Image 1 (cartoon, helix red, strand yellow):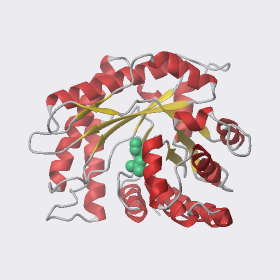
Image 2 (tube, helix red, strand yellow):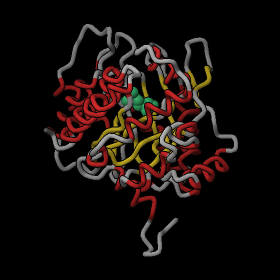
Image 3 (cartoon, rainbow, N blue to C red):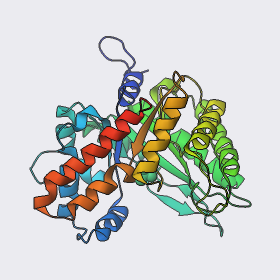
Image 4 (cartoon, rainbow, N blue to C red):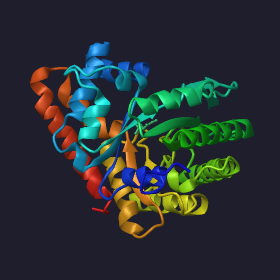
Length: 336
Ligand code: 13P
């Protein structure tokens, strides 16, 4: 177990700080390809300079540290100086924000149905040590699952659980807090919310089974799951209360109480929906054993990207738009 000079367990301390009250994580770790899609949508060329500019605008927002405890970065962002010449890890640390790093290598198809497993375990420990030297205190690995008649298959569930567990084990050995992200693409399809609950339960049970097999320290990690939702094309829509109830019931049945926090992804929900569902969960279920927080990508950045449009005269409006959303999400942690 890695401890600091006072003998405190560093992994547990960082994990707790990442889910400190009224704070959550900004997932700004879009790969170069995904970032191109986001920039294309606002008519901005996807150059390294424009990507770095975007990261600097977000991290530079005044007051960001009141609502953001950690920011997940992509390799390029952690490695290269910002337009202002600073390293982003230094900028974030000066604001008491933990720099994190996405370390998976994306997904590989394993069958005709388009199921995938996540690659990136080769040399992972060496890469983790390098990221730690560059200032990262936590990491993220995303596994992706589809819902369908025979999906997720056993091979998709098991291979991804083992990948997540190996990653989490190596992170902790190096002294980084692993964020374990099994993302079920719950919005894709016409299934109802009960199917979503069933699949999320199967996946999370298996993930925790393997985390335990690998001896992952549960108080030194965070879980980043999807919320339990009906498919976009489902006939049966669900209220925020139903979504909150089924999501929390699923988590209670699968996530051990030692895990300090659950940080939801937004997964294609609108910023308002993501905020509303998080708020409803926290309002309906005060006093759960884990913190219910956020690690939103799109839900935190979408409105700000729209305000920016790549123009320097819009930077202030962009940061304002980001902070308005960040404050709403932060209040949702208190059920407000
Ligand atoms: P979204 O919130 O946009 O789903 O992104 C979160 C994330 O980190 C996906 O890996």
